[in-house]
Image (tube, rainbow, N blue to C red; front, side, top):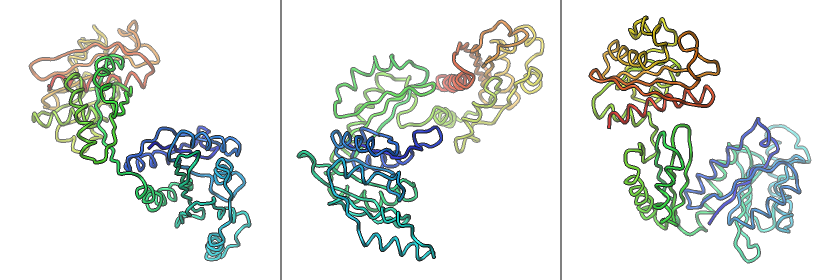
Length: 417
């Protein structure tokens, strides 16, 4: 069975408010073995919302609505669903009474328009809302010979989440066939999406029961696998089988098979080899260090380092000779090498990593004036050998900095392999 989630509210069609409820609902549905095929955001317009409801019930088995159940004129979810299904709305006197009691307990007079929240779709089950005034509704019906389940939920997350978990979800679980979802994720850094697909498509296309998604993330490609089976063991075995075959094809290009980040994997590899790391960063301004120290327990393997943005600090913090900088420029293979070796020596770490480059948007100065934006050097020293990698990155400042840190982490990982 597939589901559609419709978020209602004109405010979510502006740059100032996001629909976050759909993420929570998607996870809950997935845990029941239901895949979400569509997500829609509709403004507070009755005609448009009614049309969206008709479209949703034509293509999905389960439709969840978030928002539009309040007392105001622009709360139109109940009316739109009723119009789309040609159902009557009746006012539930028990809900009206509860609303009056709710206001009386607060020594307030209930405005007449609040009674609108007691309008219930014919045949629907009322889902009481202990955290708000608008109850939800659960409708299990037949449309054109096909079973459809529609669930109306209030918009505020503190109301929607417990109402969905404690009432709507158990109703769904009791009526749906047992299905369990299993997921796996493979992550590959610094490799083109087209290359990944060319090598893996002949494999994953053999698994029509597994949904495969290729996602291009900053500095990496991710393969997501998901399938639903009657038992969790069966579903997990199926995605594990596909994952193993993809790993065999991509080999060392895969750095993570359970969703770990590249910095997590690097720290794990350092720990397994009882090694420590330090960093000297120029154009990344500490981004590499931030990524590493965001991982709990990183202090055991990442000693620290320095942000050596100025030429003077390259010399005083990482012992880079001033004449080397003057001759070759701070953005050079020679300076990158000296930074990696210097920071390793100064901190006493097993490995020293360095990054120096021109992140833009303005070009370099002095000896680097003729060098292009995006020129970056990454170096790694282990006390015996120092590798230097030249990068020619493109994009804005943020992209260049991120990719530089990604290349640095990948250089460490490949070396530790």
